[in-house]
Length: 236
Image (cartoon, rainbow, N blue to C red):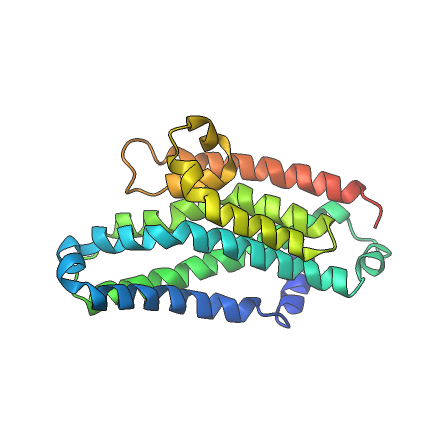
């Protein structure tokens, strides 16, 4: 597995993923800077809660789009190079290959979250929002990420199965557009859809929110296994 991870990591170096890992957190943080510069009298008195509330409007959308773009790039480079048959002519387990790509993507996404954390901390310090509320900030960034693991697993499956990556990107865009509606709709049945987990995992929500990261991890592992089994049985 480690060998597969290292091999995939070397391939990713030639894609836009490392650059997106750097540019996206900067852009997300600068968006908050602009927001605070235009409405300082309203937002600054709210402290760190206000900053996390502003970030929460965009964070689920950013995560879902990030999942779609990253999985599409990783799978797309294999499809475009027609390398599946070459890879699997070697004594390599298909399931392990699938899982390896998932964990590599997860590592990159966690790195993206850490960089976003640094960016938002700098924004808070820049505008003197007071003592850092570490639990709030960490939960606001990492809980939705954990809750989004099922979406990552679904996006990876779509990207790995279908050669045309437009389908994967389209699913990601639709999921990003609908996630807030699915989470906060009066129709509670929508909450079972994995795109709803990400907004619901915010600590700013009243009531139970810690269940959603847990659901995300459990269901995400299940979908990863199912997707890996399906991929391993396909003729490539």
